[in-house]
Amino acid sequence: STKAAKVQPTPTPAPLITYQGNGYTIGYPQGWSEKGNGSLVTFTDTRGLTAFIIEETPNPNGTIPPTMAVDGGLNGLKGQGINFQKIDAAPTLTLGGNTWNQGEATADTSANGQTTNLKLVVLSSDYPQHTATTQTFTLIYSTPTKEFEMANTQSFQPMLQSFKFA
Image (cartoon, rainbow, N blue to C red):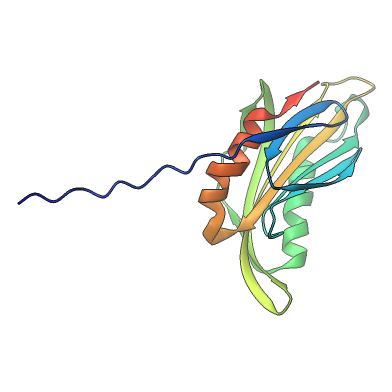
């Protein structure tokens, strides 16, 4: 007698809807909602538990390093939760041909009487580099830690791969 190995199906990313921002485009999953415009846009899943935020801040000539935006995003989670823990991650990554600074953390957050451990990733980069019109772009994505790997595969990575400066 032989035993068949169980094969775990690979999660399939959802088809993406293109969003045209101020100086960029990004795809987001069908069924998600999009709120805001201009310098701050938030994309959320139907449950409101998984979010992807894009924030633009004027940074003429790139005088403020993108690492400050990463620290600000992480400190935002630290201020909202308890048991905050920074996660070791590569300090930079390349996305769409640009170098982005990166930080990750988890914390317990409470909403509607329920506490959830949330994982948050913050990416930040200046574009265009060192000009009078430089903007700092900050991408923040988060979901409950126990769902992070699936959300990362199905939603966050396809969104990140679709991000392009216009």
